[in-house]
Length: 93
Image 1: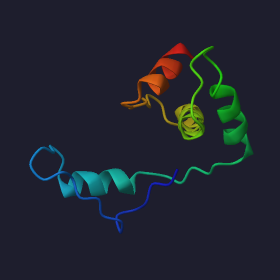
Image 2 (image 1 turned 90 degrees about the vertical axis):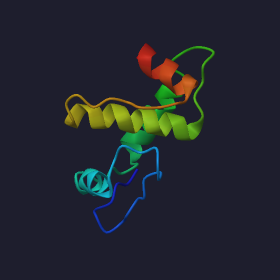
Image 3 (image 1 turned 30 degrees about the horizontal axis):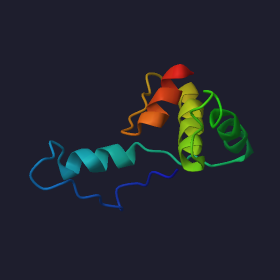
């Protein structure tokens, strides 16, 4: 997962967004580079099967593993997802 600095602009949805371009730039400037290394991949392999009958797809397992590792460094970090399967597995751990 890579979050870039302010040279990469992300345009918010036009009329429905409560965020300004300045808000988004501030968010990107605080992001860090998270490497998908062996530890993340090993954790993803475990995360993919943590809840019986609710196996995660590979990319979802990588997202969950990265979230768990990032949460060790970023106090109060929360997972935001619209994916019900990922939400169920994350809340079970």
